[in-house]
Length: 191
Image (cartoon, rainbow, N blue to C red; front, side, top):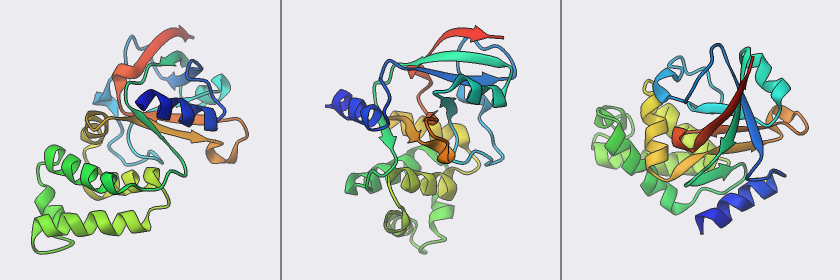
């Protein structure tokens, strides 16, 4: 079932599951690591390994262009997917497991931390345009200072990444934000 959903996400974005993606880096990598995710909250769609389907787009991020094949085992979320009721439970479980001081942040929503977490999840689910927005709210609300923990939590929850077709209104440009580094296979590095 996961492979069918994954295939549909790529098909709707007019991509092939076997398509090559690229990422520009300032140095050559032999494998990807979550240890170097930005802590300045500068990534538009939250922390993760950003990839593009256009080699020329990757050049803007570094002179070492890594050619990458995706081998996802989990879900890739696409724009426009409505928030599911199970996403609320998933988010609350991620927060409890991966954020050591989640109760302090949850107390901003209610004096009882567990109830505050429920209120947060309900509030952001009703505000979010789609599942990508929902998980971006989760990142901003509880993981903003822990980008690696967010990516680990998403991957551990069965979400390998997000796909952003028509990224930034550029025709034909698609970005993937990967949370699961195990799904990224470097094919070659172009210098």
